[in-house]
Image (cartoon, rainbow, N blue to C red; front, side, top):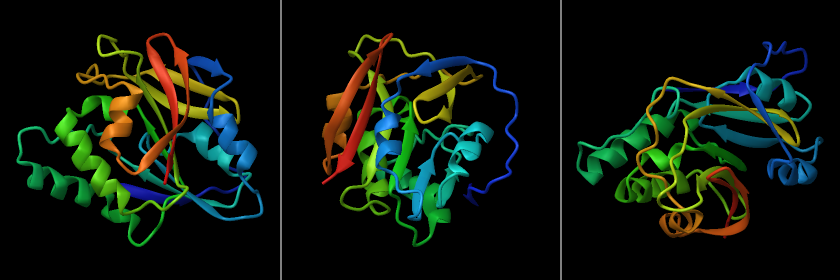
Length: 202
């Protein structure tokens, strides 16, 4: 359902093909990261080689979930059944506590009720000052393209086309904040119909 990796020096990245996006808000995270302090990251995009190579310069543990690679949208269930699915998908984290969470575009696959359920199940692995990164919709009419994301450098993301359904529920940044009642909006930036968003738990 997921895997845990310790980023290590010497990881050889695969050649990157895709569109680079510079000036990512993630650079704010990396400016704050202490390379001498161990921290944890939950990445819903799985173990992308470029991301792991970059993180090899830090003392960190990376939890790689498969909510995007094997798209997890438990729609035809009651909300308690959906909560159980999310619990099962996140259980590999164990007693770990997440400092940074890369949600990417996953919230946009979840209808509002499911997004609230997911937010509540995820909350158990977060702490005050945990930070999250995601792409939201500029507005409810936005059509978001499915991408697989990786982090090439502190200020550069790489996105590649992926065979995955188009997100059916493009949420604005405030809709995500409302579903995740325990966060505040740190900053958002506009990108071709998407809004890059940083959230902080409070």
